[in-house]
Amino acid sequence: MKNIIIVLLVLFGATALIQSQSSIIYDAETALDIQSGADVCTDSLIMNGAFTGNGTVCGLVIGIIPVSVEIPKSYELFSNYPNPFNPVTKIRFSIPRSTYTKLTIFNVTGKAVAVLVNENVSPGKYEVDWDASQSASGVYYYMLEADGFKATKKMVLIK
Image (tube, rainbow, N blue to C red):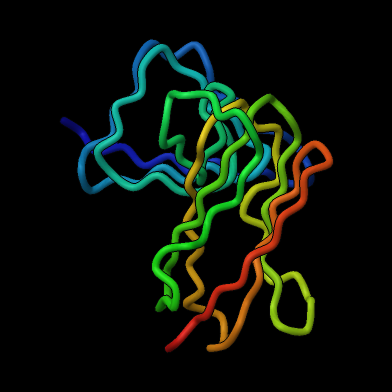
């Protein structure tokens, strides 16, 4: 099969939208990079390559991965794994109903250094990776905000 690389960029605040494709197939050495505000919609998506970005595929947020089909009973922010980490860690959280959700990483001085989730999220249990390869060693905090719920946890980056 022919390798396909699609990069969707949102320029000047415009939203990119790809639809009316019955099938999109990506082979093992291809990449799909969907930037924030972009949307890809297709009847089927077969992904064997890399999947990155903060856009959506048919309304599902890219970058956060659903880890359970069970709808949680409450909001919850779990401890990251591994902790301490170098340079990537996984952060899991649960959302019991559809709501605007924000997951932010802060340094020890309280400055936001990354926003991993900043979208409406459907009910479920999710996992998101934080790649801190461009960040300095030290203590970081991550905060989940959703529908009045707010929780913060601590993590340590050791390089």
